Image 1 (cartoon, rainbow, N blue to C red):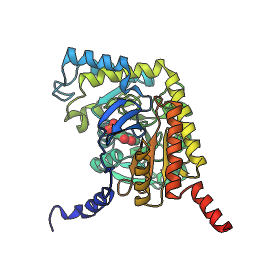
Image 2: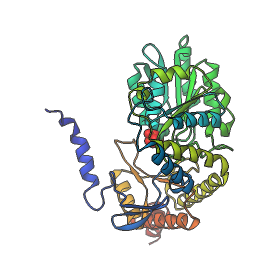
Image 3: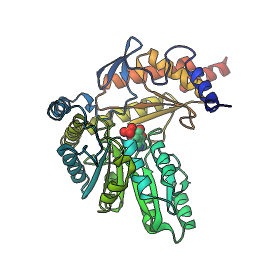
Image 4: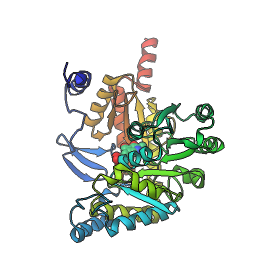
Length: 407
Ligand SMILES: Cc1ncc(COP(=O)(O)O)c(C=O)c1O
């Protein structure tokens, strides 16, 4: 036995993934040519595994803002927000985010992961309760571990199960924080947020929504699922990230409750880490303005998302439950998903391979962007069709099976 013994099964998974061809774990993107194109393993590919929903990573105004901030304030803050790491830019961005969400309070964190860990692990502590959607992101589960609170899960997207579990906490619901996400990152499905809000309020618990994949993507103004379903006023806390539709890195929590300022003072993931760089803050601020000023980006994203979802579904492949900028394709097992990933890469399409133990299912996760052209989306659908034919899955499998029966 040694410290390393526990890594044996992980090592086995890694070895099986890297047996032949490009290793999908942390595949290097040798060159990034644009938000939608890059070079991997010496060949140009369409990037469709990036979370770059609005394609803002190469937006000239964001790049210029970030360049100007680096020139004016330097490459890093070299300190925590609580010490020397709060610049005028951090405060201006917090005001802009609060105003965007129509609330009085916002905290900027260094990553989206830290926004969840900092907020959730501070809001709920020993003697209190966290009730998490079972499909919650790792940052939410890690926050739960760190919190010292009692942690329960309810069935994914099941308000009745949430209601039953809240019912069992009678007398303690005022000490309970319910956590859900807007769009779930693996299957691209949405939370039934109106029902979740109704159940949570009825039972007197608190509600936090992580809009990491839905901010900039849903809602008339891009504020996310809560805006889209008209329940913003009933949500206690919203967290999110700068690393997806905003095209940078960082995270936030917003709230109508003034106590968020106390969370700021108590959140270890805020207090004991360096603040985001001036360049990051400046490009994020510019990207936030862009979300407000260019709703056409969101419309283009959805045209691409629907086209891809319908195209892949028409191939008879197993897709997520609803059209979404995350188009998931499900496979029987890890090896089949890996083979599909390699077939797509060989045809110039880069998507994310997701396999156990990282997730319970083996799937390919294609994330669409407003920066994809219609031709790129069609090229991706064609690549999926060829992949399905090579692997004998989807309608191609049914065609083969039917012809085999006829023969
Ligand atoms: C739902 C969700 N929350 C939080 C995060 C963490 O965000 P970041 O990667 O910006 O730290 C992610 C990242 O993928 C996510 O999917």
